[in-house]
Image 1 (cartoon, rainbow, N blue to C red):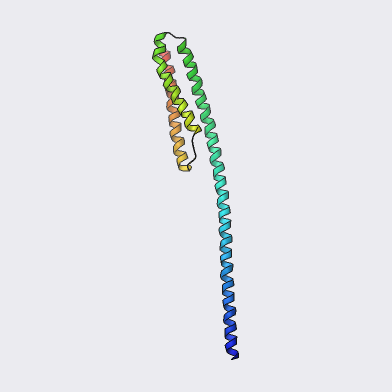
Image 2 (image 1 turned 30 degrees about the horizontal axis):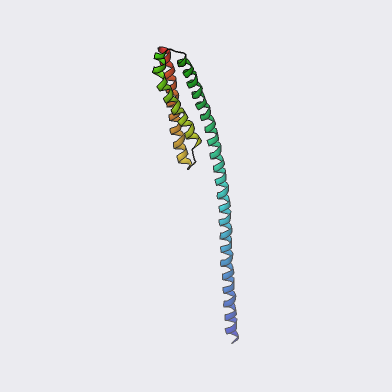
Length: 148
């Protein structure tokens, strides 16, 4: 009879030890998961800060280029306003078109919403291309005006 109780008691103790060990393993997994979540949040906030910095820097550079375009357009408008009617008619439409494209670029950069790193790279590439096209068109307009 004693052996029966001894075996039963040892089985109960072993079960208690196993359950305690399983519970400890689960607690360790939960703590590890919490640490991973905390690390992921830190990485996310670092990435967001980096993206915000990149956007701010890009926007500042673009704003300077757009302002330069606006200034050149204003100078050109002033020149054609003092010119004869033939020159004025010839360039008014082109200047208005360039001014609209420049304003569109300004609106596009101010309304941009971040949608991920890949989309940001695509946006920047396309925006820089559009900005170069407008800048070249303005330069070409100036060179055409000088030829006339």
